[in-house]
Length: 415
Image (cartoon, rainbow, N blue to C red; front, top):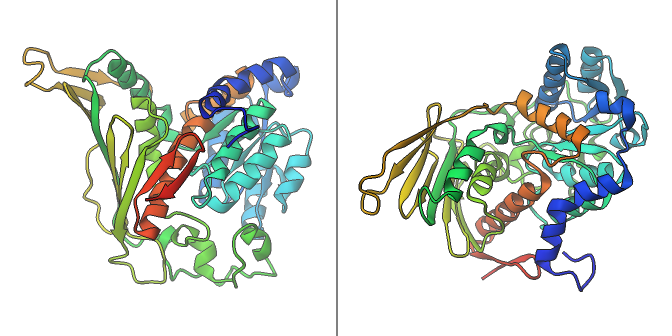
């Protein structure tokens, strides 16, 4: 990714981290004095997570937060009508019309994954701040997160990725202790998200007779940049199970556990990624694996192990391992256990979180950053680092090959 051939990789990333605030300061906020007190938001995609956004904003407004739901948008008319009735917001059938509305300051994006980057980039270019559900981008093309980062930078906008657990203070607290040398050099980390049961949003044979393409569903608009395909109910109702629209648990579950590890350990781009697993239990038409294992190796360490499941709920604890100590995330926060071979007399340290992670807290952070022009806790740069690793993981799984990252060209290739 180069703005021109003379811009180095490190220069671009550095500019991406600080550029949005500088551009915003130079250009002046597009919000103005009135919007600095009240942020007008439109939600694009009014399914499960979209309604989570709407419910959160309504709850925050009732608690005194200066936020207004100014628009709702969906290609499925029953969802659109229900969202408009619930919120009193202007209904839009086409997301492009949302971006043309001059009185909308920000958008939240809760569409299927394959629409995240196109809508986010267009919204940023239209001068809107963006709260985008995870994953920040669709898994297939590494240019997608790169384009999002560039769009935030060139427009001086604010971007929050919907990994709401990132608003938990424990990541900041542990990160500081790691910087202080509490566990020595980082060696290994692990985390998992393991679930069991016939989860509806992954059911490959799910159906709903009330969904009628051509009557109350704009199927062609829903497909958008995805490959053309005849309407199949599960592709609409359980899109996470199909490669054309999602990376399955690899991009649905993993952003929630990998982004905190990246932030806490101060990681950037991976060096090598290997993935394995399979579709062992659910033979119902879905394409994505129900067990997915990923090893992400960072140059000079650490290695990170991630495991996800749709067929067992027996998971791995979240752990960060250093040469001289181990961090276990449990209970009210985290525990730092010294490695006795290296620190025989060091005390066990307990860290209690001072702020819990939640959708409400994540939205408060976003709205505050819209007003202050600061970087949110789960900003686009962290999203970019995360999506680079997950892009490599899914390509590794599908190709049966190890993927390596070239930091100069910002590309990943099978080796």
